[in-house]
Image 1 (cartoon, rainbow, N blue to C red):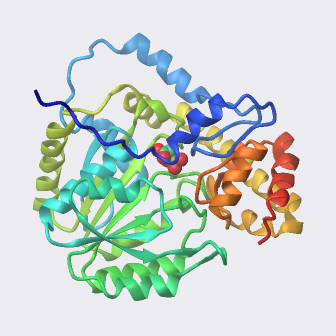
Image 2: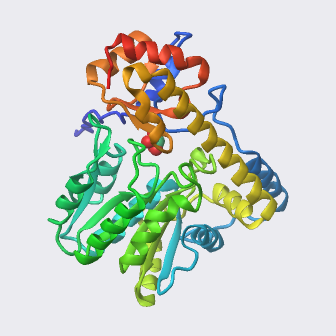
Image 3: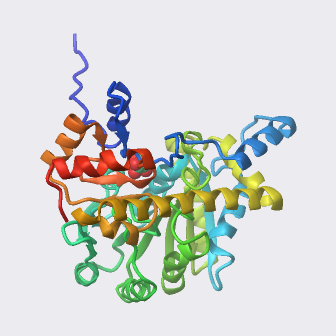
Length: 392
Ligand code: LMR
C-alpha cells in the first residue's frame, strides 16, 4: 500500500513570526514583524468607514448569489478609476481578486501565457513571497539589484544596467510605492528614466501596488505607476485593499491590464476569468462590496481618506521618533523612508538575539514594521539594538 510522502514545507518567514510572537509570554515583547498597521495600543483596528459600510451592507444586501469569475465589475471600475482615471489612449481590463496575492497570481498567469519562454525580473530585496509566488506559475525569474541595505541607498544605476540586459518581452516586477521591505521609492525622475528604458527595451511592467496611499498620499503614490503606464503599451497592475482599507483578512484586491489596444484588453479581461476559474472560481465578495460602498459614497470616502491620513501621519511621526531616539546608532535614515517598513542592516545572528534575548520580533532580513513601534516601546527597541551592537 502506498503512503503519502510529504516533505516538510518551509515556514513562511513573515507569517511564522505571528505565531512565534503570540506564544511569547514576555511582557516587554515588541511586534515589528508582519506588515499590518497598528495603533498606539498595538491594535489593528477596523476603520470606522468600513464599519459603517458593513452595517449598510447588512441592511441592504439581498442576495449572496454568484457574481462571476472576475467579481463585481462595479468594484473593479470604481477602484480602477481611483488608480488610473481613464488613461488617454489606453483600455483597461480588470478583475477582482482574493487580495493582492491573488492579483499577482493572475498577473503572473496572464504574463506566462503570453510569454511562456521569457523571464520575469524581480528587484532585490523584495517581499519574501514575490519569487515563490511567480515561480509557482512556472515563470523563469532573474533578479536585479534595487537597494543596498548596508548603504541604505537605492542602486538605481545598477538596476538600469541589469534591466538593459533583459530581452524584449521579459517582465519587470516593480513596487508602485512604499517599497516592501526597504521603504525606499524611486524619485519622479528615476521613474521616468526607468519607464523610458522599459518602453525602449519592450519590457512588460508588472506593478505591485500593495501599499497605495500609505506614502505621500493617494494621488502622489500613483506617480510611478502612471508614468510607467504612459510610456509602456501594456502594464499589469496588482493592487490590494488590505493595508489602505485595513481589510487584511477579507482578502480584497484587483488586477488590471492597461493596454494600448482594446482587443487585447477584451482578451485579457476574458483571460482573468478563465484563470480564476481554474484556481478559486470567484473572489470573495464582502470586502470588495465594502470598498465599493466607501468609494461611491462621498461622505464615507471622505471619512476613509481622513482615517488613512491619520494612519500615514502616525507612521511618519513614528519614523521621526525612531530616527531621533536612534540617532546615536545611525537610525536617521528611517525618517527619510516611506510606508510601513525599513530594512535595518542586521546579521541573522543579531536578528536571532533581538528575538530570543530581547523579545523584539522582526523579519529575518532586518525588516521592521514601523507601525509596531509604539512610543512606550521605543526605548526598549533602541536599547536592544545597542545590545546587539547595531550601528549604521
Ligand atoms: C508583509 O509583507 O508582512 C505583509 O504583506 C503580509 C504578508 O502577506 O506577507
